[in-house]
Length: 171
Image (cartoon, rainbow, N blue to C red; front, top):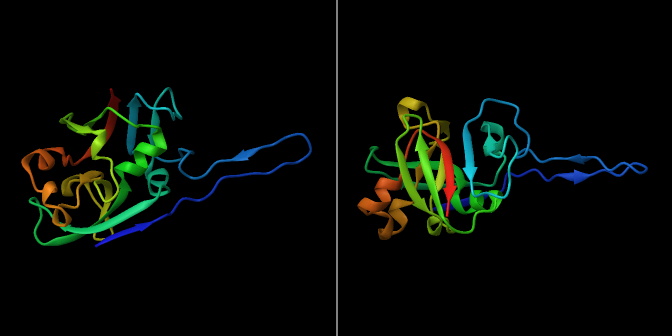
C-alpha cells in the first residue's frame, strides 16, 4: 500500500511599501543538527554550496509511506520518508547518480533513474518511530520491495543503504 501525503508548508510573500520580505517554507531553514548533506551537481544550495537538511527540513518535504518487508528485518513494516523523486526535484537533479554515503563512509551508487513515482524513499521513520543508528537510522534508503519484483534483486538490495548521512550527485 502506497500513501503519499504532502506536508510542505507554503512560503509566501508579504508586500509592505517598497520592501518585499520572503518567508521561506520549512524545507529551507536549518535550525537543528544536520541530518543529510547533499553536494555535487545540484541547483539548490543553502550552506556553502551544499543543500543541508535537519530533521525538521526533511520532514517538511512531501512525505511518502509504504508497507514492505525487507531482507534485514522481520515481518512487514511501514516506512515513511521523502521519496527520491521528490528529493531530486527539490534539489534540481534530472540525471546522473546519487553517491549515497553512510556514517561509516560505506558508499553506493544510486542512478537518478531510480527516482520514480512509487520508488525508493529516504526513510526517517519505521512504524511511526524515528530510527536510531542501531536500527539502521537515522536515514535508510528503502525501496517498496513487496510491491514490485524488480525491487527484489541483489542490485537493488545493494542500493538500500542505511545510516545514510550524505549524498553527492555526479553526472
